[in-house]
Image (cartoon, rainbow, N blue to C red; front, side, top):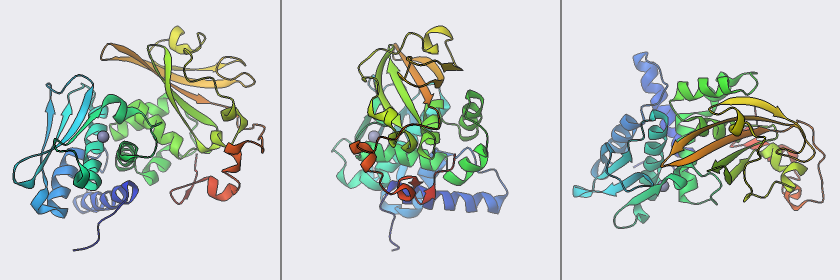
Length: 303
Ligand SMILES: [Zn+2]
C-alpha cells in the first residue's frame, strides 16, 4: 500500500491533484469542489474497509455543533453536519470533518468528533487537530494556485471576496482567512460576537511589524466608529488614526450576520504597507530570516 499523506497540507494537495485529473479527463469545471463526493469517493478508494459511507445534513445536532464525524457499523464512518442554510459554511464543515477522518480517526473519542461553531471558525486556536482541520478545509476548497490566479493584481475588496467565495462556495470569513494566509500585506481579521472582539488572525506581514506588538486588547468592544455599526451588512471604509490603530489609518472591509441568536461581526483590517519595524520585539526576532518568514508552504507570499 502506498504511503498516505501525514499532514493536512499534503492531503489537500494529493486530493486536489486527483480532483484536477478527473475534471480534465471529463472536461468539467473543477470549482466549486464537491466536498461531499470527495469524502465518499476518495475514502472508498483509499480506505475501502473503513470508508465514509454517509455525508448527511441534519437539523437535530445539538445547539452550537456544526459537524460531527461518527463511527458506524462495519468499521464505516459518517459525516453529519448542521443545515445552516449557507452552502459555503456547510462545505467548509464537511471538509473539516473529512480531515478528522483522514488524519485523526485513530484517536477519535468513542462517539466520534463533535465540532462546535468555534472549533470550525476560530483560527486563533493553537496548532491542534481543529486548526489542522480548518487549514485542510481552506486548502482543499481554495487551492493556492487557483486562488492566486483569481486574485492576480486585484486589490482586496468586498467584491473580490464575494467573487472568490462564490467561485469556491465557501463563506466570506473562510475566504478572508485564506487571503490572509498568502498575504504579504499587513492585515488581520477580527472576529466579534455581539460587538465584542472574540479573536483575531494576523498575516505574516503584520506579525513582522510593530502594529501587531501593540494591538488593541482583545477583550475590548469593537470600536464605535467601525462600519459594522454605521453601514451594516458589508462594505469598506478607511478609518482615520485612533479607530483600530492609534498611529495608523486602517482600511476595514466588514460584514455581519446573526448565528444562534448572536451578532457575528467579521472585520478585515488592512494597515499601510510601510510600518516601523521594532527589532527589539520578540515577535520580530522570530522573523530574522526575511526570505523564510515571508514564505508560505513553499510559496513566496503572493498578494
Ligand atoms: Zn473538528
